[in-house]
Length: 161
Image (cartoon, rainbow, N blue to C red; front, side):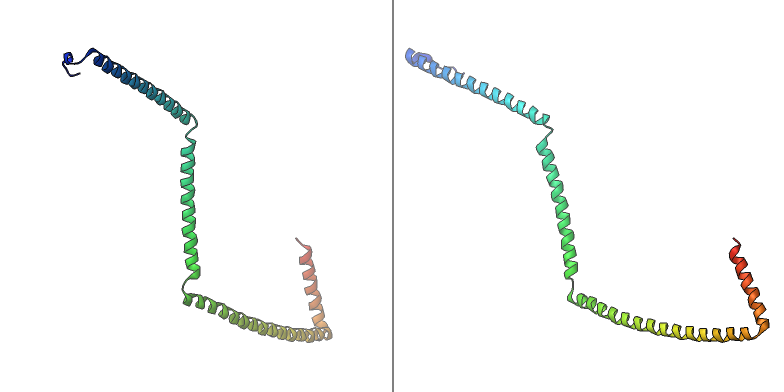
């Protein structure tokens, strides 16, 4: 405190100033007490939050991770959408390729039918020749013994493991 000359002041005025100083001191002590109480309450709450395992922090981090995944999915879907939209010329080429596939299918199917006709024709020719050979074998007795030997050989092969 600064040194002042109190002789100039009256006693009542000094008492009044002293009383004001005491009131200010009491207010400051109350304020300090309130601040200490508030500080201890906040520390208790901090310990309480630590005891909860920082649930809010965990939720926040989980939400950030989820948001990141969703953003990646959005970008992938947008890329796919752009690919689907693509260039109109590319889409026309794609449609033309489908039209070409139908033409190629019909051409292949026609070729298949032609091969089936040819196979049927060759099969019928083969069967008629076979029929002629079998009738000739029956007429010739020497062929009959050859046929019997062949048949016996086939039967023995079937029986043996």
